[in-house]
Image (tube, rainbow, N blue to C red; front, side, top):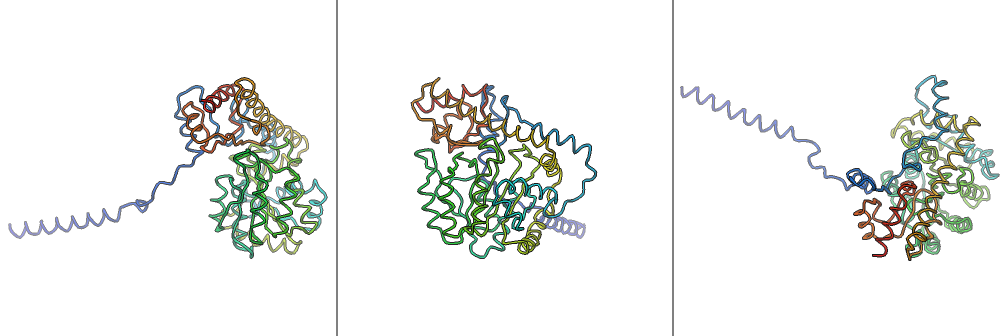
Length: 436
């Protein structure tokens, strides 16, 4: 009996040791992972969704909404979908740099409307690739710059800029630093600070510039200010990356909103710049948010360099996502190549731009004339595109959120979140927090 008891005790001890080691091995590999800080825009959305107030207002929305506050599928996109449904023959992979037809149409859309752009195309100096909207395009450009640009791995970004810009560039292995952009006292461009910061930059530094409808401020340089910026960029031999996410939302015309690109094209042809890069997206101006379709362009010295750069660009893209998705690019191809659908798209962009302008005017009128607010709200009219820096302070923003008006702590609002049914409530709430 003693031997049996001893044997059982030994087996029990051995079992407990096995159980102990099994427990240790089964501990999660992610047990030490800490929760990341909440995204400020997504956090607002959570608060908004949990709010039971029927009059709540979401001014953090990053996508276009119609006058009823609903998402809008563009008629041109619906028409393209119908064409695609009848004509599509495969779901094959596209090449690493995207559909050849897509890339040729992008070149035509971006570089065939000005003499300098045409010259760059004729001379084989434009390399275009399909990207995964603006974010993916910028990430690829960042990776390429880090790997192949010999002068600097530092990128100057405007203060402020889109929150994701810094993360995209730094994840690509670049470092970032800010240059002056927005004057918080005047709610306008800090021209002197901007030019001074660029003039103080190390020669060859990379600089990120918003082509139009600056996010988050809505403040764009005027054309003569762009000339001054280009002069400094040329003098300091900076390498510009243009980010064009809102083409068409400034003027109502996708072609007119290429005015800044035309200036950069001319600067290259005239020898003031050797290169620049462009990230472009169809998320906003075609409403293809979830399709993730855009493009990236690099200006080269000529055809031979273009071929070499393309070969290395493919090496950058291949391990990132192998090749881009094709459904959205096929829709873009149809819209840009079918004359009737293209004309409908131009009208769709004008409708979206006009609505944003009208909501700016309506909010301005409510604050100035209906509620007789003593502050100057003219910057609502002067800023362009989907976003606006209101000048509201953080404590005022907190009080607005208490009134079920949701916006980021820096006072940025999405004009797309304003529509006729809620603008009076919004103006009233802003008036109350700025006067009491």
